[in-house]
Image (cartoon, rainbow, N blue to C red; front, side, top):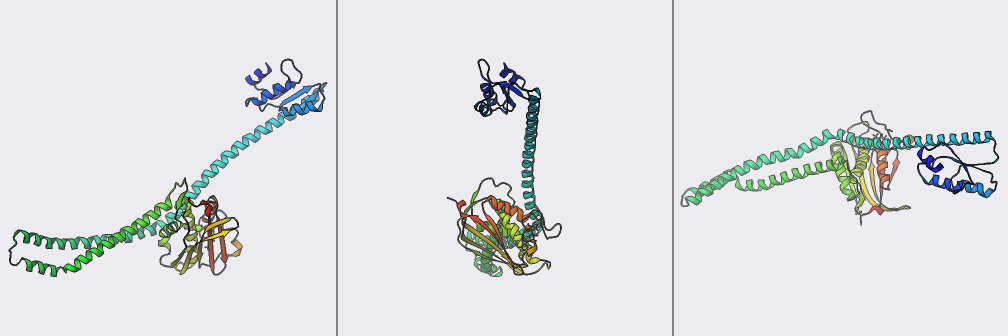
Length: 384
Ligand SMILES: Nc1ncnc2c1ncn2[C@@H]1O[C@H](COP(=O)(O)OP(=O)(O)O)[C@@H](O)[C@H]1O
Ligand SMILES: [Mg+2]
């Protein structure tokens, strides 16, 4: 009956005798503890038994306290109060815990949004330059297509004469007319020019494709699964996206060594490379916007204590990072750039992404001669 009523209307606290007919107090308590609906009810045993063993058993089966008979009413009262307070405190903690878990989940979503908006903000800054960059090859294609259509027009004239020659073969002046026309339109030049123009068109298309593909890699939102990725191709895609910002002032020196393809999230990794390169460009440009400089990108295989890594070094000829701020550069929102230029999120987001890849970011820095930012990606993630 006690078990049934505890299930129907769970009490705040329960007092149990140990010695009872049919089922003893320990068994009742065990049953209560095995049901999630009654598990949290504090059970206080009341018994005349004073053996230590029995007291211990009371706690083993899930009791919270033990009062021996004969008891004082006040004692029972204060003990009950203590346990009720404990129950309330535990409930409050559980509620707070749920709230905290929810807050954490919200925070994680907010952080994901932040990462994506940093990426898109960077893209926003680059868009005008990229549009210009696409315009160049498109103009190239356009002029070549115009030239090509003029050439084809000329060739059609020659073809037409040949057609006539077929129908009135014995026409005496036709061969001469064909020769004259060929000379007039510089026939051989036209045929070689067509080849060249087609090459130009293909080159224009290739460059446009390269830019569009890099942009697509860069703005990818979804990178659920790791992909076997050529790290060099990712760096190159990042360079294409950034090209409008550096091409006039900065020369890029690549020292790519053979490294295996890695299991990484390409859409996130390119964000890291773009952040680091973008910082290097900002550093070189410094206050004088058109300052010249060099960025050296080196890839190597290196073994550290924690194992073998593919190491990608970005070395710039900027002013270096002053000692006073060296510890802060990975802090979220830490920036030395003007409002609207820097978000201060680049390196903190990059660090998060690289840590997700079980990698490391190291900054070696000689103030006055530039900064080297190294990204280390573990080889364990190598594709099978
Ligand atoms: N290559 C670098 N040379 C000099 N300073 C750098 C370099 N990379 C980062 N920093 C410093 O670290 C700060 C934080 O960088 P980051 O997190 O990318 O944010 P942001 O670029 O938006 O300022 C920069 O404002 C700059 O002061
Ligand atoms: Mg940055």
